Image 1 (cartoon, rainbow, N blue to C red):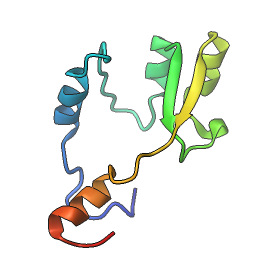
Image 2 (image 1 turned 120 degrees about the vertical axis):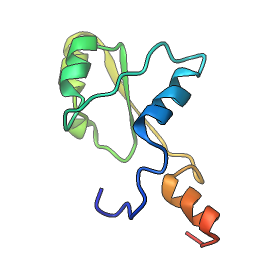
Image 3 (image 1 turned 60 degrees about the vertical axis):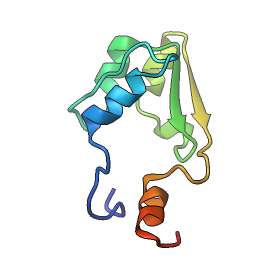
Image 4 (image 1 turned 60 degrees about the horizontal axis):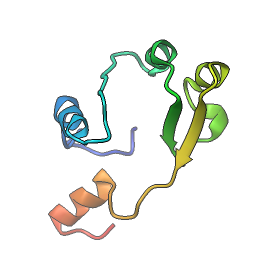
Length: 96
């Protein structure tokens, strides 16, 4: 978003995908060029669609498609100290 600041993304999309794909619990990673992943979600129809708890359920893109196919949407909390902004501040020696 507009509040992210300069120097973003800190880790590029391809490198983030490689890290995620290396996790044992991850079967595949898909990148998309559209503004939202609605088409990708509608094609894949995951059993569970997970978003951060900063989203409201009615704002989750692909929710209608996933739920119509019998899947569910889960909102998960953020963990303190794991945001890119906090990481950059620590690297720069700034407080958040």
